[in-house]
Amino acid sequence: MIYLSSRVLIPVLSVIFLLGGQASNAQSANELRGKDLTAQLCNSCHVLAQRIGGGYTPQGWATVMRMMTNHGLNLDAEQLASITQHLVTAYPQKPRPAGVVIAGPAHISIKAWSVPTPGSRPHDPLATADGALWYSGQLANVLGRLDPQTGAFIEYLLKTPHTGPHGLMEDKAGNIWFTGNTVAMIGKLDPASGVVTEYPMPDKTVTDPHTLVFDQAGILWFTAQVSNRIGRLDPKTGEIKLLTPPTPNSRPYGMAVNSKGTVFYVAFGVNKIGAIDPVSLAVREYTLPNAASRPRRITITSDDIVWYADFSRGYLGRLDPVNGQVSEWLSPSGPRSQPYGMSAIQDVIWYSESGTNPGTVVRFDPKTQVFQSWAIPGGGDIVRNTSVTPDGGFVLANSLTNEISLVTPLR
Image (cartoon, rainbow, N blue to C red; front, side):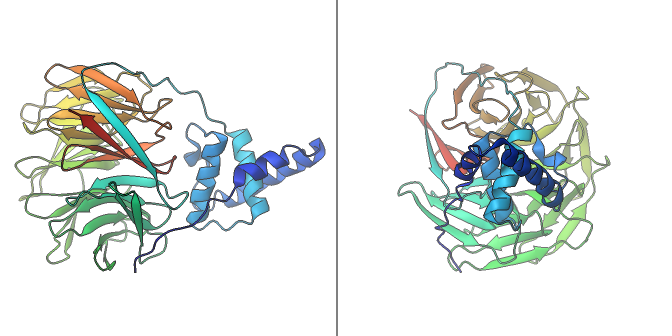
């Protein structure tokens, strides 16, 4: 079935600010209650400390709590306000490096659309052949489709509760494939009917399908980050084969395919990039020169050069797979800029700095080795992946601001 979403965000902040006017003893009691509830409830699905990160603004924490309620955390209004107030007080947003804006020859326009369901946490965007912009609503259990010409949204509710849709890809027939990150499966959505077909993992130890990509033969490849596996799914038969990278705990993450059908992935757990032969399924690893490198996303230009976003060190990297030579450039906003989602558009590299305030869109021309950058309106917190439209637009999914953005180069 196809669902049009019309849910409205719970006004958490207004409740919080009303609480701020109460007497100090009532505040203390509420703070203690919020702390106790947080310890009790916010560790039920995961360890709270693993999700704090750099903290959030009050609005950010309100959005995070809506994400959690979307994902099944059952709270009444009083509990929600108490927990949110505690998180706002105990874990404020830590200072971030300023997003550096560099002037240059390119001109762009940026347009953003708020997705219909609050707290959706749009994770991956996808520009499809028909001109639509899709997104995985990871914590709303939906795939969303935006018509950028009209601004109309359709959200498709997935079959299994709390699927955790993550990566997105389109096949030649227009079906939308996705990873079910929290239920260990690959899914296929037929947009015409809304029917979802699920392909569960054949090995129960593989629990977190992550990013996916099609090769030229129509085979779907995917990573399972924490499970340290690479998957290969044949859409004709539904058969899934699973590979294990040579390096333990390498945490395969982003993926891309070169012109010869070789599948490349970045290993977020180590300083490596892997390459898979699509015929023999042999895995070759390239070690990056800095032991602290933790690449997160990857893209490939038409010359089969591999480009990666070094999230931990704030660098854009280039790997020549023929000789293993690596070159790196410090991202405009510096070592703490956290480069993340990236794409190649007409052999120019576009990516987002996700650790800055505000987040940025960065353009790097490999021919001139010159950067240009722009601030993302509204902050752009946080762009985990990107996509490219048929006419060369750069698509962002902004997880915390609950938006899809389109960057259009102006000619």
